[in-house]
Amino acid sequence: MSRWEPDARGRLLRAAIELFSERGYEATTAAQIAAHAGLTKTTLFRHFADKREILFQGQDVLVEAVKAGVRGAPAEASPMELTRAGVASLCAAHSEDLRDTGRLLDPLLAKTPELQERATFKRSAISEALQHALHSRLSDIRQAGLLADAGVRAYYEGYAAWMHADGTGTLIDSVHEELTAYEAALRRLVKDTPRPASF
Amino acid sequence: MSRWEPDARGRLLRAAIELFSERGYEATTAAQIAAHAGLTKTTLFRHFADKREILFQGQDVLVEAVKAGVRGAPAEASPMELTRAGVASLCAAHSEDLRDTGRLLDPLLAKTPELQERATFKRSAISEALQHALHSRLSDIRQAGLLADAGVRAYYEGYAAWMHADGTGTLIDSVHEELTAYEAALRRLVKDTPRPASF
DNA sequence: CCTGATGATGTGACTGAGTAACATCACCGT
DNA sequence: ACGGTGATGTTACTCAGTCACATCATCAGG
Image (tube, helix red, strand yellow):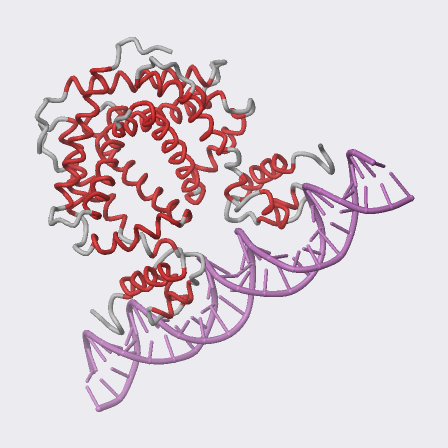
């Protein structure tokens, strides 16, 4: 299977992270990334649709994972449990070095609006997938939307907490914890809000 | 105040919409847009940071509006009422021809991923602004997040409904209606979910 | 061991987005 | 009339991304 140097995509990812971290995203040329990975600009764009996509490769997997997670949930699952199943499947879909990669990616995202835009788009794709999956099991499209938002929030914030933590906790535990907190916040919200909230 | 032909930004917007609708986004050159508006490519990029931004000009106003709306809400307002104040202010921040512009923009967005990405980014900017504004009045950051998501959902869906409707209803009514529906969905969600929603 | 098919890569040339330096021109106040 | 200011035009440039074509490493089969 493997001819030439294997794992061109992985090499390009590492090269991109390294160069972006040194010189910044805009100051790094696509040709430089390719050369640093022992390839050419043309080959780079054979693997990725554009420069940003190097860093966000494999996010499509997450969209599929979240759908599969909801689809695979037991028939008697409550709306919240369906959401949990979706984000749990999301967590399981990652590779092991996500923590290290994430730690390198995080500061880059923080200072590069162009990358934030792509990250936001990927997040919304996951959110939409989760919403549609939930909708097919819930009938109420608005509940599906609210749960999708809550689930994706819990996922991203659980991920951030897990990434920055030194401990040996797992991603999925961190996300579950976050989702539980969101569920509680939601309960408090409804309880404390007067019924006729008109105007 | 007005020298030369006035309202360069508006002319560029109309030119862009027209050409994008005819030939598509990618097939339209920045120079063509500029020429169609009686300007030059350089001048176009003096007004807008990039090609997409022509269509999304003025969205910064919305971010400010949502902040101001929450800030201006009465001290005794409930969380849901704060959210309502934010999105109401959002609705009020629009120009009158939004309906027509939106109807032209909508099909473009539907078939141009590059534009969807920017639209998603703008939406997330509004959502973040709403969340921060709510957080400063609510202390619970997770409630702020959930409410921001619900509010922005109601805003965008209310907007879509209002835009496609032939009637003479107002934007704010459509959005309020949507937000009420979301509040109801939220109540049902909490009521129907068993308390120990673990696993 | 040769040979042709296949698929990943390289080369060179091209279009278009976006930038920058410098020149120009319309208006406005004096 | 005159000078200042700000919006625009001109020209040339870098870089992202594309395309047609050439190359080369591997593998299957003779």
